[in-house]
Length: 75
Image 1 (spheres, one colour):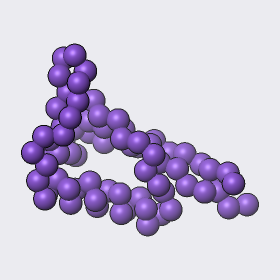
Image 2 (image 1 turned 60 degrees about the vertical axis):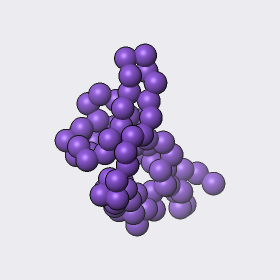
Image 3 (image 1 turned 45 degrees about the vertical axis):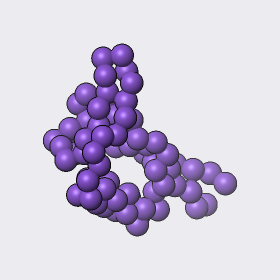
């Protein structure tokens, strides 16, 4: 089986409703996740999933997040 990968970047403004906190020491955790925040992430996952992409990892930073996706290549 062969895969292709994709990395997408999402500005902090795209996810301004998602509360994610990273301390100066680098400790990160989700805080006060509301239904609207869950729906925002769910929509992103479903949109990519409909195209065959599977989320591998989300990387959060000060300016937003990176999403790493993969899908099976069909030869």
